[in-house]
Length: 140
Image (cartoon, rainbow, N blue to C red; front, top):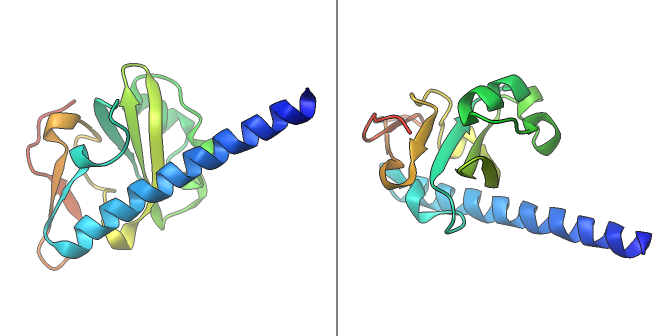
């Protein structure tokens, strides 16, 4: 039973990782194609809000952005990395998906506010830069 449970946990973790890689790859494709990124088109169907955690974010920062506790330090490398942003897709009071996204393929680190509702989760690229900003600045 223990072996079965350990295998199930490992498979669940791998599935979450592949979703994260798929999300980041889709965002990178949008970034490479043009000057906007439409996050409403990525991730699972169930999310209603996306939050951005910038470089060196810790659990306290994640909780402040999300409005509920989430262990960003255990789930990602964001606390020790300046090369990625973490996009956290939430539904109500739980995380349904997340991805570590390389900043050179879309730098979300300075978006304000840090969270946006799905229907308004479109970003525009600053000319000549990898930096992004919300197309509409309304908070989630």
